[in-house]
Amino acid sequence: MAVGRHLADKSAFEQQRHSEIADGVLTALAVEGYLCMTEIVAMELLYSCRGPEDYSARWEDLHKLPWLPLDADVATEAISLQRRLAERGQHRQPIPDLLVAATAIVNDATVLHYDRDFDLLSSISDLSARWIIPPGTGHGGP
Image (cartoon, rainbow, N blue to C red; front, side, top):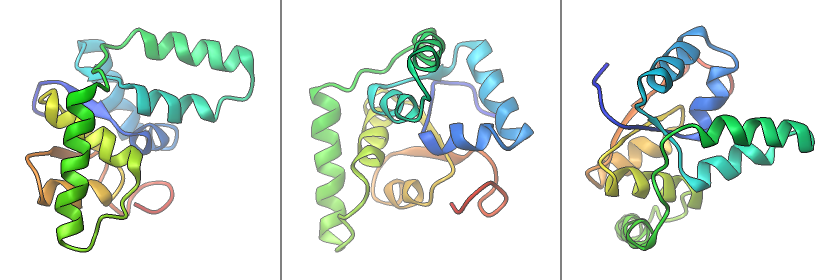
């Protein structure tokens, strides 16, 4: 695996719960300091917490990671991605995916995912993205 900053989408974290391979990839990146977090992914992960204690524990874990800010440059890049998709009639992509992709582009990071939307976003931009495990091999549909 190439070394460098990686931003895991919520879909990669979902696979971590079901796949030893995905767990190993995310754990290794975190230990080496290459796994990054951003606000939109944190919000998606924290949304599913079962209560205050679970939320606090998860927040502490996420807060230990290096953070890539969701700032004005990211918002501008996300709108640019959506505009390029609109030119192809494909602009109805999930907003969180656009923000994750834009965060990675602005911060020169690779998105780890289990979601075909990132293949589309890679095809219209400089997004570096890779599947956490091969498509079709994980829990749920890609």
